[in-house]
Image 1 (cartoon, rainbow, N blue to C red):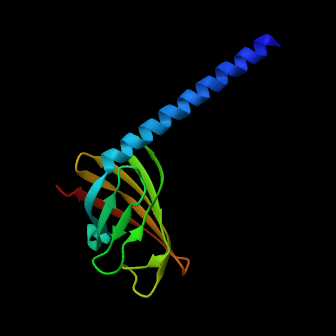
Image 2 (cartoon, helix red, strand yellow; image 1 turned 90 degrees about the horizontal axis):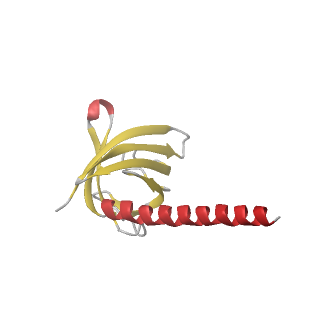
Image 3 (cartoon, rainbow, N blue to C red; image 1 turned 180 degrees about the horizontal axis):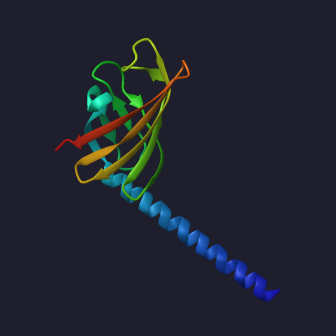
Length: 140
């Protein structure tokens, strides 16, 4: 019985330490992605179909994406690991398909220095889904 209690305590201590380490690295990676980013959304043959300005905070709260017209759209940081950050947004009026609504925009971004790249998947209220490549550079 005593052995079981000691083993359980050791496992819980490891889990707690792992969770604390994960939270610590989560903040570090978001700090690395913090700043104002000029982003391009690429369609067929890498043609630019939209441009946005993405503003990332160091704590992951208050991230936004702004098209040249309209109000900024809130981005929710879903997860981060390594050089990657996963965000979601929506619903909002589509700037690629006029007159349609993006119900969910799911983006996986990779950050290295002042460069960002990744993919976005837009789900529309019509049921259609489009996948885009994205690239961005951090403003000085």
